[in-house]
Image 1 (cartoon, rainbow, N blue to C red):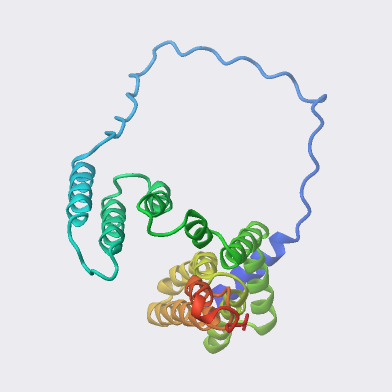
Image 2 (cartoon, helix red, strand yellow; image 1 turned 60 degrees about the vertical axis):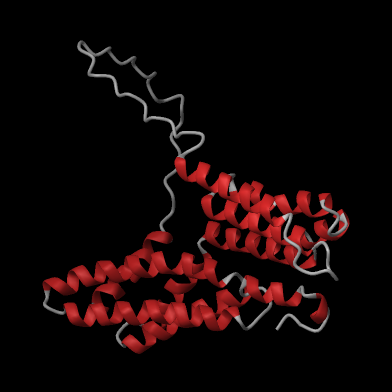
Amino acid sequence: GLEVMGGLISSSHSLSRLPSAPPRSSSSEPPPQPREAAAVEGPKQEPPPAEAFCTRPHAIGAASGLLLFGWLQFVELSAEQPLANEMLAVVALVAVFWMFEVLPLPVTSLLPMLLIPAFGILDHSLVASAYWGPVQMMFVGAFIVDVGIEHVMLHQRLALNILLRTGVERPFVVVASFSAISFCFSSVCSNTATVVMLVPFATGLLDTAAEQARARGEEHQAASLQRAVLLGIAFAANGGGIATLVGTPPNGVLAGQPSLHGEVGFA
């Protein structure tokens, strides 16, 4: 399977360098001829049925959430914290609505911003600051970088160039190359986005190589290489995710805690 993978990488690299054909002049092309109407029309396809606005799970979730919300209003959890029951009611309502998807998830995520100030638990400015701050802005910038990398296919270009220079004769080198790329990208991007970008590219190469290897009776070697590459990408992405602050969202959640404000650096 390694020889086939090498041929696929070389052909992909050579095709990416081919110049694009110049566009044809619109003046030299003859005007398009109108198509003749069909003599016999086929049966018309009916549009798919629209989804119901309120399904049975939605109704169950809405009823359960509202009943739980109302019941917890009358439960006194602590005399020292009289607003604890209101906060628990808000948490229960949002959790039930989230699980049953009673409302769209973005709408459900905004319910605490409305309910917490309405019950006097916290001021609206404090609640709004938890939704948007320096940590959230940092992750928005990291997600924009992820979109840019995927748009220009930087991960594929880098992987092809590294494999062309290192070769594919040794399986260890192939696994190490994909693992190094996964670690580096997940250090400056989200580790989940890194795996989403790399796995389809690696799987495409490995699946094509496995089909050719199966015809030669080398199916076991190709399957072992495929498992090793995918596991290498996953473990390297985990390592890169804990290397920097933007590697994975839980790092930003930890850095945004008031007790650790300013104590967690980028790396």
